[in-house]
Length: 239
Figure 1: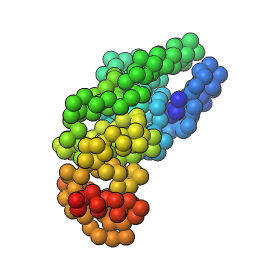
Figure 2: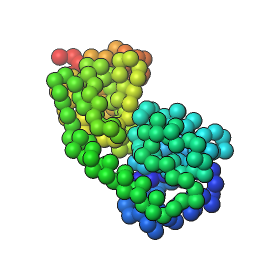
Figure 3: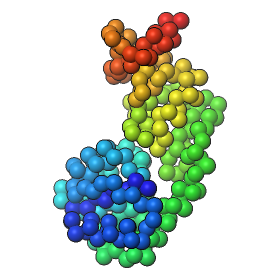
Figure 4: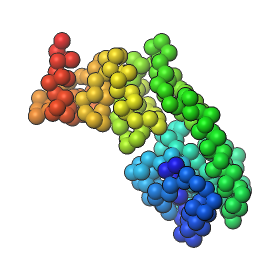
């Protein structure tokens, strides 16, 4: 499981990293961060599946960090902190566990196992793309959220994740690749104009000529059309 540790104390990060390596199989620590700013940058760069998050950071709190990300987060959260007064708030952020420092190995293993069990419970929902009438089921930590396909303006690849954009200017990130949605949404007037962009043709406002060209979406977003996709795309919008 792709994992990031965010804690402003280097010693705490080292201890947790050593314990995870020693006691928890299947945990791949891909990065560390020591503040809100570096934490946000690291999350957006590496797209983790799991984040161990301290509550008190040098430039704010872990809750401040989460408040700057899409809700719900596209990753699982385990808080690791020296303070026991934030447990209720952590639950409100859908944290799967709340571990007090100094970290007890048995509690750490139990927390990681809890995540594995949660993943197992949601596996069926997350492994398949669900269509129910005119709605698409997208995976969340709790299961599936059904959204009206006609309300999706575009999908953008974010590494192994997909960011959905909607007509009301809201967006959500889901833990499936854009490739997973390409074949099914093309039957609903969507077109993959670029390896990172799947757009709803109903919301294209303008096409601007160029080598591959650009499309302007109804919300004003401009997206490049891949050269290899240009001819096929023009056939779609001109016929």
